[in-house]
Amino acid sequence: MNTLPRNTLALTLTLLAPAVWADPAGSAQAANNFLASLEDSKQPAAAFTWSDPERRQWTYLPFGHTGLPLSEMSDAQRQAAMDLAATGLSEDGRERARQVMALEHEEAGKGLLSWLWTDGDAYYTSVFGDPGAERWSWRFEGHHLSVNLTHDGGQLVSATPYFIGADPSIVTDGPLAGLRILAAEETDARALYLSLDEGQRSRALVAEKAPRDILTGRDSRADLPCCEGITYGALNPNQQEELLALVMLLAGQLHPDAAELHLSRMREAGVDKLTFAWAGSSTPGEGHYYRIQGPTLLIEYDNTQNDASHIHLVLRDPVLDFGGDPLQAHYEAGHRTPR
Image 1 (cartoon, rainbow, N blue to C red):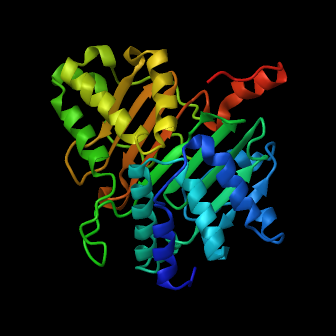
Image 2 (tube, helix red, strand yellow; image 1 turned 45 degrees about the vertical axis):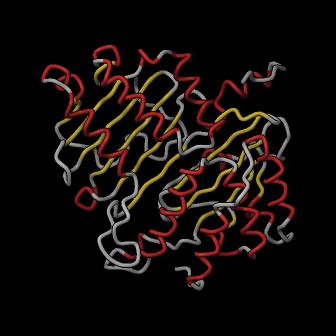
């Protein structure tokens, strides 16, 4: 377990919120600054080729991460890593990331299952390919957080998968007492489900018992048949607005340009193609799961573990996760992928 002083975490959380932060077009400069800050001995842990299979091997577990951890960085290197992470997140997304990392730090070493927690410094930065080149990407991740951005030269082509989680989802004691991460993502979805009439609810409910985790897990492809649940068109106008608000709530954790990239893909595919599915109980404190799905969008939320106080939430694009296969096909054909 990481034994760095607690003030190291405070420094990390401060660095995650720079006064001025770059948009995704500034990611290349931020990534190059990060790599340039590293000694030769640290380069292999942080820098990978574009073709390295590790690029698609993401995880939200407390172990199994690849990259250079914050715990092995100097203050300057940590600053550079946080500057890179900030280029992929909105102000709200950076706040959520700070909360997740702070919670991870506070839970480390508690109870019989303390091995499940690492520390607020056990977050890893990886760069794939040469920043600013035709194809390159970066990842910042650790327990309950994974940010993956893929670029085509100066253009962003994918900001998925994006994962965020919390355990416990409601903190009842200690310095973080009262913190509730992902509250709206739970309460707003439940309110939408409860607003359905009996006929609508029979279509939305896909299982009486919620699954143990998000169904796509840590798969490199979000290969989940589309689409179970109630269709967008079967919702009334207020319910349709609530469904789209849920999508925007999660997408809004990404940098505005990244969020718009995926929201525009959803709109182009047709919001009428979206479905909303629910599994498990609608009673607070009991296991539940929901999914919002369309041709270019998959949101999975699961809260079943630890007496329904352990949230996993992911945003994916079944076509363009990690840049997607179409990106490779376009390059092989000698074309650039359109924005």
